[in-house]
Image 1 (cartoon, helix red, strand yellow):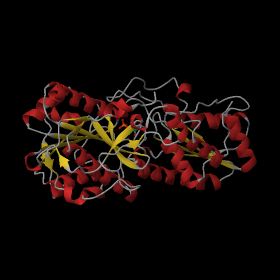
Image 2 (cartoon, rainbow, N blue to C red):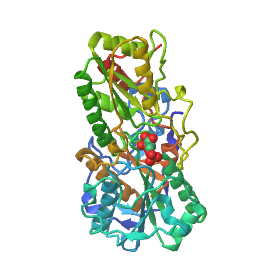
Image 3 (cartoon, rainbow, N blue to C red):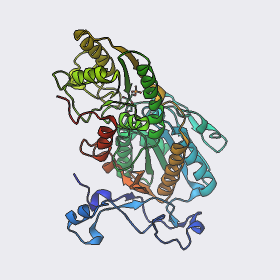
Image 4 (spheres, rainbow, N blue to C red):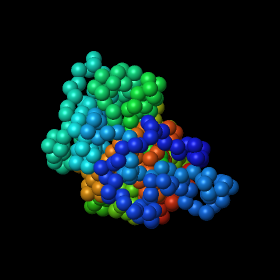
Length: 441
Ligand code: F6P
């Protein structure tokens, strides 16, 4: 589905009648290539062909509402009470986002009551007995130096009605949800329940995914840190593979349904010979299958490096855990260990020496603090989220579309999964850098 005008419309709680404390900063700013005026739109389409295919007048072209401070806001800052929650798996930069939200709310808007809910959506549910923590600049001082999240996290949804009961009981006006697609589905349910009760509570998301699998937000925060960390494992595998006769370095990285980490990490040091991702099926056996292709390369060049995303080749795996995790994600089987054994067996069947070094950086890539690029992205997303919420926007996430900060309705952000396009330019770069065939088998 190609989004249209209506899909990009952002829900608001009401008219903005209060002068923003940031209004003076905005005086006389026109739209330029560096700034989008709040009344302007960021076009969805960015090629002449895409625009032409719509066949509609300029005003009907779909566009995102731009992010950034508004001259008039919805909430009276001194009376506004804010909640923050982090949900799902860890991601570099969670603490940067929390700190960015707290500092922007406090220093620029003058919000005085900010609460952190602990361990994801469990933090709102009385039976878990999670404490609520007060957040102020002192409480978040230096937290960006550390990985993880000071609020803790958890997977899984909780009853939206009970969450709204808690928000109502605590007189929360704004809730920031930092989480992945499952958490954003939960955030939308909360925003809907708020609306049904006729309450004025803004629910604004900061999308979090190291797999970079949320659509319409360009690159997610923490992704760059994660793939940079994975790059270290590929470099190690390459060094090891070079040091032994017929060396094979096999690196297994995260990436449930989207192979972005594998692709970017492989491109970063250009040491990988094969990249296997969920989006591109491959044959294992046969003369043109992956195993024979790998063996011939090792025979020719004396070594090879393989990077496999965890979601790749799942169709080959029938044993091991199945079902779904608490977030509703399909439990994956271990393609890394599977390939490790199949490669070893294949070389043995051909009576060929092979020395494999298997590396799985696993959680080490997502538990680290954000790198400076991601820290910048986090703080800017946090600012955009605060501006949106204070202006009464709700049921939306902040993201960046073609380089501009924008407001993306949650319904759109959860409408599909961002995946590596086998016909796109990223996969083309991987094929060019690795020299691997377009298909195996
Ligand atoms: O969804 C992000 C992710 O990092 C996946 O790549 C990975 O499969 C999953 O989280 C593992 O997280 P956990 O073990 O915490 O469920």
